[in-house]
Length: 258
Image 1: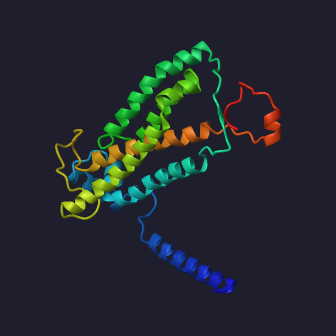
Image 2: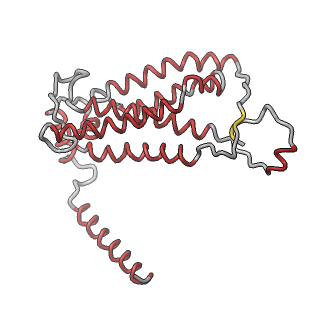
């Protein structure tokens, strides 16, 4: 296929998509009006499945398959970052030296760390009941761990952040979401269908598969963000010529792979 033909295919495909999107937008409710058919149906479906948080019902029930794609994007980003930024055989790492932290910053970060961690876990656990969920709570949990970097130093963060363990948890969260979807097939329903008992409304066990999928997302997001930040923080890269490196005396202040 020539370049000209490919361009015509692209133009015609784009025009066709624009026509379809324009036709679809004409059927949407008027902006600012009082008719909200999609919202009303989402609320009705959420209440029917005993899920208090309608957003969680949309994410993990009504369009759980789409959420699988969103989760997979983060998983692939973490995986790609680990592969691209891995230490090669011709690189070596120098341990970072401790950095002085002012007492007020140290005290504030050490007090905020457990509070932030608890808030993040709470947001994940109550995702089907109140605003928040696995995506938001996972980011809060990952952020809480990195307050130790601010309060002490990078070596203290490394002691509570074994990257291999978090990478495994990242993969486990992704696998749990996939397997929960497959469990619906075993139960005789469609993939990622909410097939479990809905439980008592407005309790932690309500919502069927919603709290389980939400928890899987929380584990995957928290672990994925930790792995991403670990890969970025480890990259204090300095490219040095081999002869220059051999002649240069070691510098204990160097940090990261060289």
